[in-house]
Length: 156
Image (cartoon, rainbow, N blue to C red; front, side, top):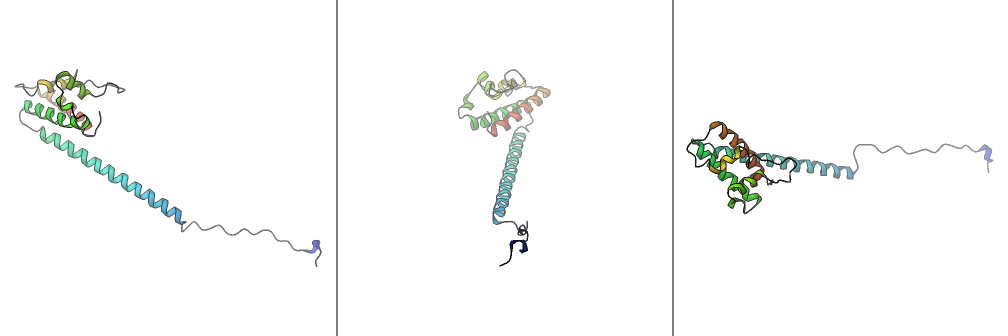
């Protein structure tokens, strides 16, 4: 037997680190899950954008009438149809209650008053007027279009 002072000792050899490619099967699963989630989000976003474009087209085509009073009546009808998506009884509201509904929740950070105090009041009687000012019609159309899209998206 050799004496301890005569033994040749060698340092501990650590095995080489595993290569980074190809990744372990778990990383393939994570990559597939991230890819699938990205595809689902992309499809959802595309579908949402297409729906919004379809609603915009519906509103614009319905309001492309020659008479201003007919345009206001068409806007009012579309808003009532859209309101049923949010509240099934909203289309039966009349007068100030209807305008308050169109303004939306008063609990918002910045409550809207476009319909109760603004140009949106024209929806109450604009469909029955013989003449409607073109400037007011443009403002009402803008406000009504914005609210129509909000209601169709399900926002109160």
